[in-house]
Image (tube, rainbow, N blue to C red; front, side):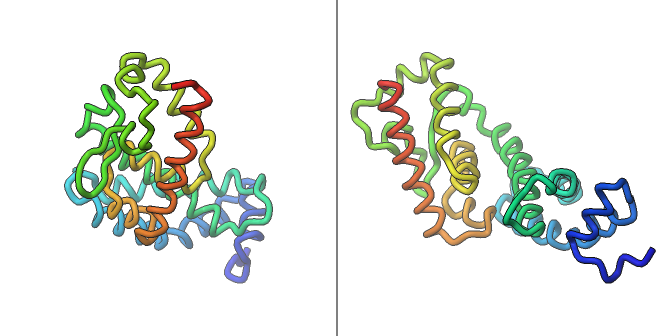
Length: 203
């Protein structure tokens, strides 16, 4: 069968019917997108020992997830959904690599700005919050972080995960292919939502 004239939706319909040729065409079609994203992220994170081939593989896994689950999406193009899935997969990988170099994350909560590591209470600017008590009670810490995550949009969540993994504003902007102003605005929204969660938990 000639797939050359088929669009993404048509290729997806064949892929859902276990047509491997259609699936492989989609993988090949979006490989340059993954390569571009991997190159950009490696420029932002050159010293974490990440291998381009490994990141390409992770990106492909994100694309496969998009192909397998896109039929549940509404009012969104496959390109947009695929890019989101690829981004999530790549971010998970670079965060895991970054955290290996910052094991202190297991003992405290901090957010890296371009100037310094700022403790969670300073970032939220909430004098009522007592981060020492939060850190002492790791179960409470995990509950707090999970509840904050639930309040965030997809983009804010990506920014948040990178923030608590010691990425700078500049690195986050490069990784997510956004300008610094967009990242800064997202961080301000995250702070506001985090403050709300602290109040809800009486912290």
